[in-house]
Length: 124
Image (cartoon, rainbow, N blue to C red; front, side, top):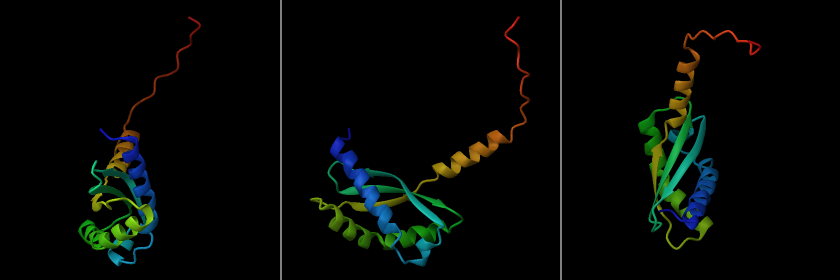
């Protein structure tokens, strides 16, 4: 069960990393038009943090993940300097496709051919 301190730590990690991701100069990472952190899950002992990234635009996923993993030591060092935690968690990055899936489901629903019922009067 996560504590309030862990929730605050996750929020702090998300805030600091979202600012640091803009500073990465690796072209494999910069191929994404828009990059955002959707969620951070940190273990209770603060040793590992799983960072879920949402990417807008067409990217080569393998190259993007290689680029972000090569920047992970720098991100971890900067995170440790910003947060002053006892342990700076090891960063594990994963792509979050929930926004893409939601948009796809939304287009499927909007393309359904459903006839609307005519409004019935409540006077009867």
